[in-house]
Image (cartoon, rainbow, N blue to C red; front, side, top):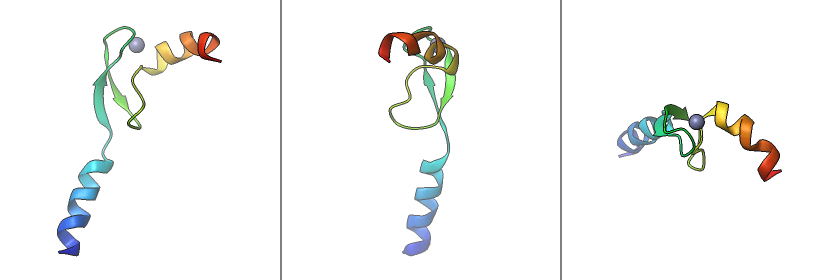
Length: 49
Ligand SMILES: [Zn+2]
């Protein structure tokens, strides 16, 4: 049972690809709340900060 759980957890750890909310480009998101690509993140940092 533990092994099964471990397997699932491992696949969940893999970075998921998302579509950037800003430019719509596909990018590897590092966490659940990561919805804009690194490039857009840099361009909107001044707005959210
Ligand atoms: Zn983007």
